Every structure is written in structure tokens, then in C-alpha cells.
Length: 92
Ligand code: HEC
Ligand code: HEC
Image 1: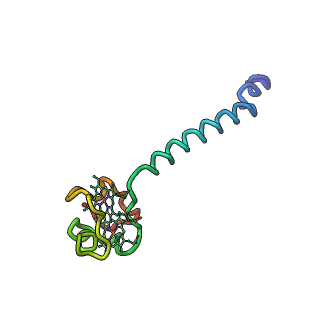
Image 2: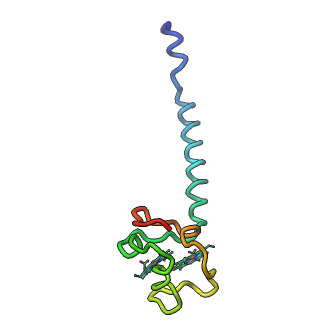
Image 3: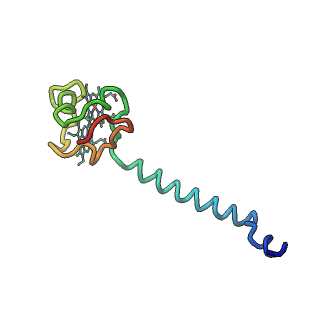
């Protein structure tokens, strides 16, 4: 490769700016869309170790410490809508 060819492949400042803008747009879209999702399941001890729907419902049923809001769907797979904790202990 000659010296001149090498130089051709150097991205210029404008290219970097262009990629920077693309990255920002993509990031904004990704972060923006995740905000519209439902609340994630907190990644704390009590949520990491609840490994069945029944376990969730002992606290989030109508008699629990933190009932689901009125009109919340009955049944359903919790993690389909509420993001599962990162360090979750089980499989649903
Ligand atoms: C031992 C009781 C308990 C168990 C079991 C439990 N939760 Fe919770 N959960 C709570 C409490 C208390 C809160 C509210 C306080 C907080 O944010 O930590 C909460 C909050 C939440 C929230 C809302 C978070 C927010 O930002 O307001 C979601 C969603 C949730 N739990 C889902 C689940 C799911 C799904 C399971 C089963 C895998 C589960 N919980 C098991 C007690 C429990
Ligand atoms: C079809 C989607 C869907 C499923 C499945 C689902 N939820 Fe929800 N849940 C929602 C929506 C929508 C809300 C409204 C508030 C929000 O944005 O999180 C909500 C709210 C909640 C809240 C109150 C959060 C707060 O503090 O405002 C709790 C607790 C909760 N859900 C628990 C559960 C549990 C436990 C399960 C599994 C048995 C479950 N959800 C399954 C859609 C769902």
C-alpha cells in the first residue's frame, strides 16, 4: 500500500461527526422505546428469588403488601411485560 492509499482510508472529522450523529439518533430511539415499556421487576433480593407466579402473587395479589393496580390483567406471564431482574434465580 502506498502512503497515499493509506491516507484515503482515514476517516475525516466529518465522517466521525456523521457517525456520532447516527449513534445519538439510534441511542435516542432505543432508550425512548424502552421508556414506553412497563416497569421492570426490581433487581432486589425478594424479586430475584421469587421463581413462580404464585410467589409473585403472595405480595402482588389483592391481599399482598403491594397489590397490582386495579384493572391489571389477571394471569399472564409477569416477565412478558415486566422486565425480569438481571440476577433472577429461576426460570418461569
Ligand atoms: C416478598 C414480596 C414480593 C414478592 C415475592 C414479589 N414482589 Fe414485586 N414488589 C414488592 C414490593 C414491596 C414492591 C414495591 C417496592 C419496590 O419497588 O421494591 C414491588 C414492586 C414490584 C414492581 C414494580 C416496580 C416499580 O417500579 O414500582 C413490579 C413490576 C413487581 N414488583 C413485579 C414482581 C414480580 C413479577 C414478582 C415475581 C417474580 C414479584 N414482584 C415478587 C414485593 C414483592
Ligand atoms: C400484559 C402485560 C402485563 C403482564 C403479563 C403483567 N403486567 Fe403488571 N403491569 C402491566 C402494566 C401495563 C402496568 C401499569 C404500570 C406500569 O407501567 O408498570 C402494570 C403494573 C404492575 C404493578 C404496579 C407497578 C407500579 O408500581 O406501578 C405490579 C406490582 C405488577 N404489574 C405486577 C405484575 C405481576 C406480579 C405479574 C405476573 C403475575 C404481572 N404484573 C404481569 C402489564 C402487565
